[in-house]
Length: 415
Image 1 (cartoon, rainbow, N blue to C red):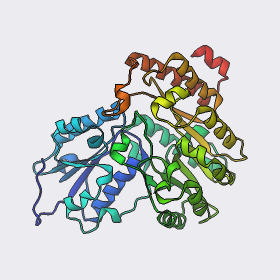
Image 2 (cartoon, one colour; image 1 turned 180 degrees about the vertical axis):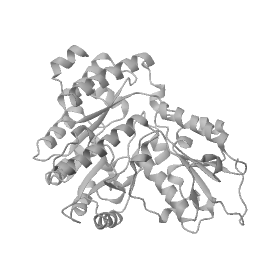
Image 3 (cartoon, rainbow, N blue to C red; image 1 turned 30 degrees about the horizontal axis):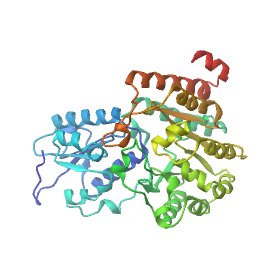
Image 4 (tube, rainbow, N blue to C red; image 1 turned 90 degrees about the vertical axis):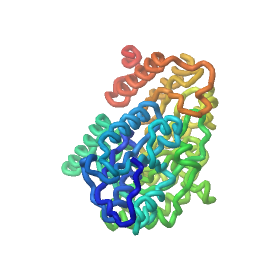
């Protein structure tokens, strides 16, 4: 491991192991790495034991995916043939550097360091010169449950086309599909969340220049795509570093063609609230198909402890304003349970969001203290079994209310 080949040797085969986290931003990076290797004359193999470069994509935003990444690294080290290189990409090395050091991997390439691949390959074609805009549904196979959902959405989309009617339920709107033309709109964020370690890997917000986005939208239309997915850790903050904002770039995207529809991926509440008066006319076009607004908690007290700078009633007013439009975007959100200091009353405030808000899909996540984040040292940590109980309760409520569509009084009796 860690052996570097001489200039005269030709590395011919590479293998990529996908992260178990079904993150489209991760998939984009993986496909960029894949395209880079192919553009430099390499051949992809499905057999890790014959690869000259074995690349592992990792995620560590929570404990589950961190454990999965570590297990994958240990497995691939056993599969590595003599003289081959093991290269670990993704967030793990930045989010938990102490753990990563224990794994003794010589080559690490974090999300903001992809240019290191140029030196590793002594590349003729730079990785930064490669633009990737598509995700394949099979890219999500490492997460069986998520893969089943996106496959089901694909089938429903095809059937909808044949029957001339939409059969895809609203709660699936933010799940990826091969019909998306994915454009990287930004990387990183402006947040100061006390629980999140992702910024250590992704850094401060870096917005893609609007002209580069428009060029890719024009390419999408020429290739027959109409659904544009703007990928980013927070597209709501797009343009803050450029002296611009999301409400300025969206009309330019829609102006490319009347066929264009936009899926915004993630829009943080702070920016949705701040830009709402400028965004409403854009939403009124009916051409913003969906986005996820991660609320995290229904308790203002917990939001303050999380480092989230908005109030829940203010956000609720904005979301209901959006939902009242003739053809509003579909909405998804995230609720975190078990944050340090969360009382039963705080949990109930979060539970009420499922009934009150016009949100089609809620991802329910248990709080997990990530390495070197402030919340790890907060008092009143919630025991793991209690976090699981809270998670299971809210997840069950979401499924019964938003997928099965049972009335709230029935759900309350069940939950």
